Image: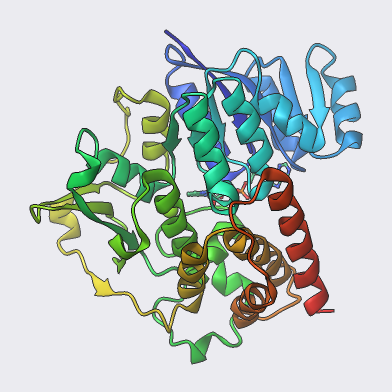
Length: 382
Ligand code: NDP
Ligand code: MG
């Protein structure tokens, strides 16, 4: 049976690689709707490559323009457009590869339609993971990880009992600045930060990798997806990004998932699950050629953002919403060269300190705290 896919963030790094997988397996997958943001040239190319009935873009202006060029398809826009794509009546699986907590509402709406969620959009799980998992349980919808570490954990614990798990070991490459001390980070440029040693990704997550916030978001993501206590989630520096993560069991056995650093592998697994499909012409892992894998203990002082994230996760409530919104706002300011690299952590910490935590927040509270936090971070630098 062909799986019908709706895709949020089709013009992004994960989005384009998802389209590659759909193209590689036309007998397995069919794209039924997608969203883009501002990249209209790529949007047009995707419309030409895939006959889809529904497309969403960020602005109304672009939607009107595209509607004239492609009168045979429905073009929608904005936050509501994301919901229309995500919850498309024909979709079996939503690949959520949009950037940021803007992915929350569409995810919840797709779950209500009984659509399986393949989630790359970790900000949604950080900002309101409890709402996503509660809805998934209520509507009996699988939430399948796309993030490489979580795909690895998911594969390693496949078929194992949750009570037999001792801990999760999430690996981290260290990002663009792993060979610099914290003092040496003061004057780094956006260009330096965007230069990731192992992975080619969108700019926001590349900055998150350099600050190590990405790993912090991933610890929270793991807590949300697998319901493992923070005490039992460990982060391990592993510069080669070959072991994507591991699960240690109560009997001391450790199961790891390995592979070349290629996001198409976890994307495809989330789409094909519970089956595995062939990847034609994909490079195979050659351990003899790699020779050596390195591991180092994580330094929580050097990588302050990771500590902030774990603190927020342990605090729970709206604190992870604040962490995520403050990080999104601060990274955007850094990318616009309005703040220095180390100011990212400072702004997040300040936002967290100023926040009065609210437990078990509903959607309205989450959206309110998210907007308020972005605002206050922007005001901090004015
Ligand atoms: P990109 O920046 O490359 O792509 C983001 C996508 O979202 C683009 O299609 C962009 O549109 C769209 N978009 C951004 N903002 C909005 C908005 N406000 N409304 C509608 N659409 C919007 O990001 P990545 O692909 O790198 O990352 C996507 C998600 O996947 C993130 O949550 C990231 O953490 C996660 N992830 C990414 C990995 C990677 O390898 N890249 C690995 C693991 C997780 P446009 O470009 O047209 O403006
Ligand atoms: Mg990851």
